[in-house]
Length: 330
Ligand code: SAM
Ligand code: SF4
Image 1: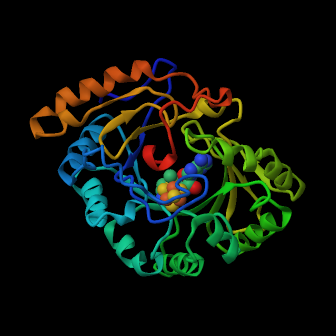
Image 2: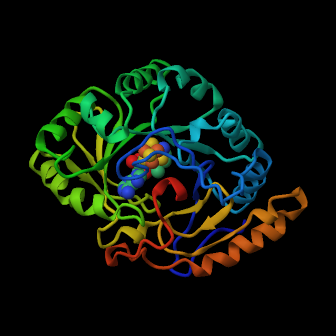
C-alpha cells in the first residue's frame, strides 16, 4: 500500500480534518469576538460527498485515524452523518473529534451510537466563573454532565484539553483541582501551551507561560513520564499508579516537538495543510468532485509530502497564514 511519508522519514497515519470555521464560543486566544462571517469569501465548507471522497483517498494511503475538528464541528447539521461516513463508508478505523462540549449532555448518546472512537473536549478551567470568562459561555456544568453521560454509556476514550494561561488557569490550585478530577476519573487531561497566531499577539504576550511550569508540578508530585511509543504524537504523557486518569503536556515550543509529527491537516475548504503553521499547502478540492478522480487525488497528495518542512519555526514568531486556530482546525 502507498503510504504518506515525508523527506525526513516521518509517516502520517493521522489526519486532522476541519469541517467548519464556524464556532459558537468566544475563546480569548482564538475567536475573542466570536465567529465573524467573511462576506468576501463565498467558498463553502466541504460537502459530505467531498469529505467521503477525501477520507476514502486517505484510507487508501494508509491513514488509520481522522480527527474531526473546526471551528466547532458539532455546529454542522450533518455532523453525525460525517462521523458515520468516515467510519463506515470510507473505512477509517478510528474517527475522533475535538469539541468545545457544547450541549454534550444531550449529544452523548448520539455520539456513542455514531461509532465515534474518541473525544477531546476543551475545558480551560474547572472553575465555572473562569470557564465563562475565557469562553464567553456559562456551560461548564452541561459539559461535565456530558462527560458523565459518556462514561455511563461505557465510552472511555475521553481527553480533556486546556490552554495554559498565565494568571488565569495556571496556578498550583488549578493543577490540584485537575489532579482531584482525574484521581477517580478515567480521563487524560492535557495542558496545551498557548500558541501565537496571526490574530492573538497581544493576548499571547500577556498570557503565555511555558509548560515547564506544569512539568515541575508533575515532577514534584511524583508523576512518572511515560516514554513515547514509536508512532506516538507530540503529547508528553505522565502516569501515577494512584490515579485513574493521566496528565499530559502539549508543548509546541519545545525543541523536539516536530520530530514526532504524525499528522496532516485539511481545512474546512479543502486545502491540504502540511503543518498547523507556515504557508505550505494547496487546495485539493477540485479533485473531490467525482469518484473517478481518486488516483489523481492520491498522486497530488503524495507529491505534496516532499514540501513538508522539518519544523514549524514557531519559536521564531513565524505564524504563517494561521490567523487563529479555528481556521486551520486546532
Ligand atoms: N472548537 C473545538 C474546541 O475548542 O475544542 C475545536 C477547534 S479548537 C481550534 C481546537 C483546540 O485548539 C482547542 O483545544 C483549543 O483550546 C485549542 N486552541 C485554539 N487556539 C489556540 C492557541 N492559540 N494556542 C493553543 N491552543 C489553541
Ligand atoms: Fe471555538 Fe474552539 Fe476556537 Fe474556542 S478554541 S473559539 S471553542 S474554535
